[in-house]
Structure formats: C-alpha cells, structure tokens
Image (cartoon, rainbow, N blue to C red; front, side, top):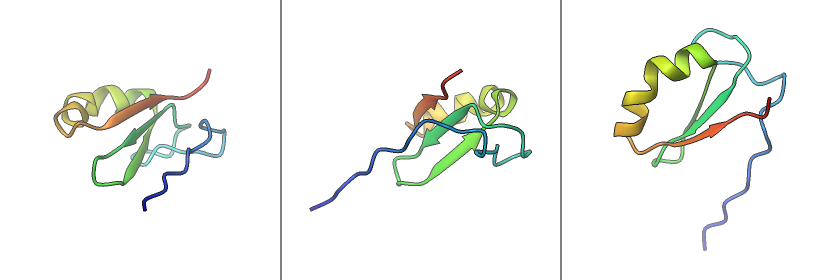
Length: 61
C-alpha cells in the first residue's frame, strides 16, 4: 500500500532550487521527486515540466 502525504503550502523558508530566491512554485515529478522554483525559473522551465507531466502547484500569495 502506498501512502501519499500532502505537502503544506510553500513557506518563506522554501527556496528556489536554481537560484535560492523565495519559491513560488512546486513541481512534483511523476517519478516522485519535487522541484521548487521562483517565478522566473518556473516560467523558464514550464515547457519542459509540462513535457514531463509534472504536477505544478502555485504557492499561496
């Protein structure tokens, strides 16, 4: 049996995996990994994330 734990919304402590800025987007990959991006890097990588069928979650404003 697989159990999936829901992740809380992004917090001020969550940082972009590319540049260290405040994370605004969480991308959950089909393989189970996750990436955090600032708005700039989320836009830059959005096409590839769609190709990978990533689940994109916007942080709360």
